[in-house]
Image (cartoon, rainbow, N blue to C red; front, side, top):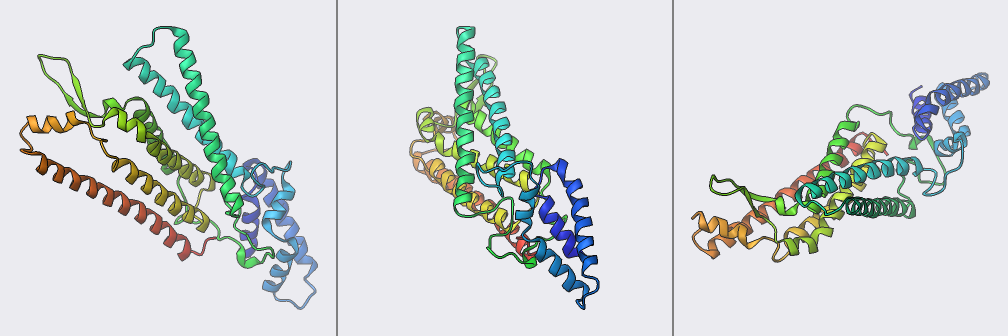
Length: 333
């Protein structure tokens, strides 16, 4: 009866959490009655199960019939995943902007209270609109290319061979893993957008107050900041998808690979930007006598950047390949 369990799982996983248990019981009773109705035939048990499941049809279509109302903003198959990802992104963006404004207020206090609220709400609305737009565009692209997040079946004629495997521990995605990824991406957005001047070398002395030697040239950094913002936004969307689906599938594994490749390209564009590093950062090491001349320092710094790019590329590629191998080994669609 494993195939029956897989069929019921394929239907109920598309439905809201509160409906799943009732629909599962209803389907169990329905399938049992249909099997009993074929008890007098000369079919084997496996053939009876196959015939009944084919008669019930595509789990995606059957799940739609159980929905309280039709949802066609993105498409019935992806709408629930879309809404969950959108909620996560909106919450993350709202938290990030709020924390960013608080940090900005501490670092550079505004002159009046109305200025605080105007700045906060304008930044919040702008960020929420961008978050909504990014998530919607990504899911619209999925819909256009028939990438099914909420379903596994793309063929017009459904067969039981397309049933997903029951979720196992090997393919499970823990919510904590996704929440940590989202948290770090949000922190990155906050720091890079509101406090890039605080990234650098901190110098403490008894004679003078603490000062920061910035790592980045502020003007150049702000010009290439969109690369970082898009990369971090993709990270939030990717982790939100993992949280929404809850397990690795072939579709999610390929999306993960695509996001990793695109993110790596953005990372290279950012870190290779000319004039990105602040001259004061280089001057500090000359003053300390760590580097004796420009040529040596530039050679070493170029090697550091190249090594960082290689490490990031290896990590992203390894992450993508491990999950692709995992889902194909278990034949999860």
